[in-house]
Length: 72
Image 1 (cartoon, rainbow, N blue to C red):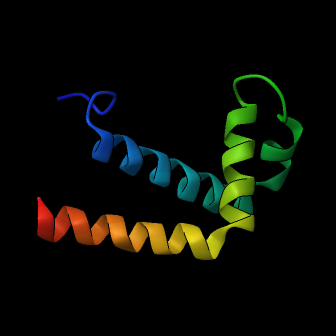
Image 2 (image 1 turned 90 degrees about the vertical axis):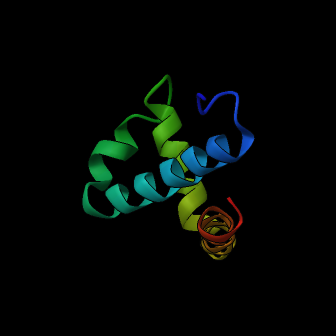
Image 3 (image 1 turned 180 degrees about the horizontal axis):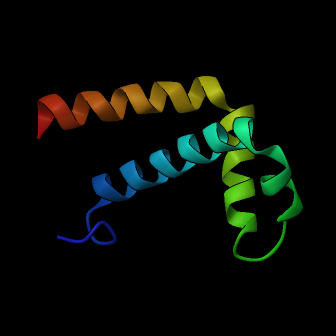
């Protein structure tokens, strides 16, 4: 089943995207910061969410990992 139609997989993809963008922005801030609009602006927005809401994102990742490992 595709991640688009499975809600749990969609949430996993979104969390991984947020965490990956925030991680990559710590190494390459100039690349992320120059693309604030358009399609590449989505990655900048995900990086900002990952930086500013990091405790909530971390808790969400832990809950998602627990549900994937033990509930499915």
